[in-house]
Every structure is written in C-alpha cells, then in structure tokens.
Image 1: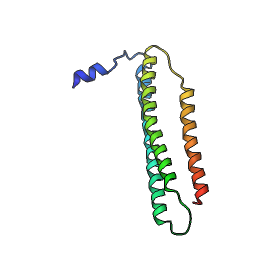
Image 2: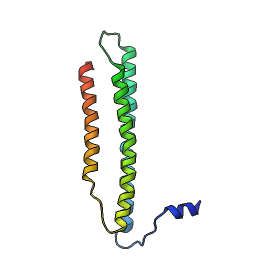
Image 3: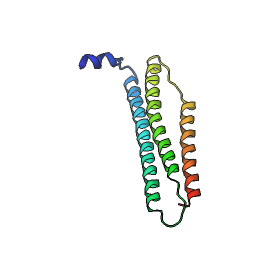
Image 4: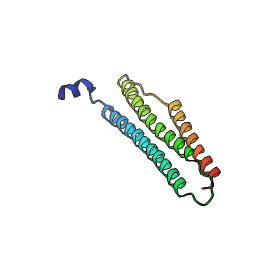
Length: 132
C-alpha cells in the first residue's frame, strides 16, 4: 500500500510557503466537495418536497411532479459536476504551483456561479407558478 501512495504522492522540498500552499489547495478542494454535497442535498430535498406536495395536494392546486424531478435531477447533476471541477482545479493548481505559478480561475468560478444561479432561478420560477 505504501508503494502505491509513494507513486501517487508528490514530494516537494518545504521551502518558504510550499507546505502552506499545498495544504490550502487541499482545503479548497474540500470546499468544492462540501459545495457539491450541499447541491446534491438540495436536489434530493426538492425531489422529496415535490413528491410529498403532489401526494398531499388535495386543495385543488395544480402541482407538477415533473418539475420536482427535473429540478432535483439538475441540482444533483450540478453537485456531481462540482466534484469534477474541484478535482480538476486541485490537480491543475498543484501542477502549476510546482512550476512556481498559480492559476486564476475566473471563468470556471463564473460558470459555476452562473449554473447555480440558473438553477435557483428555475426553482424560484417553479415556486411562483405553482403557488407554493
């Protein structure tokens, strides 16, 4: 097992802020994972709330269970994508830091923010149109 870990691990001289930078990179990756887990949780909650709403909806309101499925699936899919974005960013940052450079990922963060805002907008529109 140690041989596998040694092959996959990157060993660097701890000069200056090398260790601090790499530990910060790991914390950033874990933040991406936490964000993805939050999005997945929201997706599951939306799916369940729409399901319960349809099951209990005897007050004459028109509730669309498909909207809950689509929104729930979209949040879960975005959460899964965030894991891959975080993983890509982690290894790219690690590689560039070993070369003395640091990647600024404005486009990636902007795309993730836009996708999240689009889903939240869809959720808001769904809530407004269903009267909930």
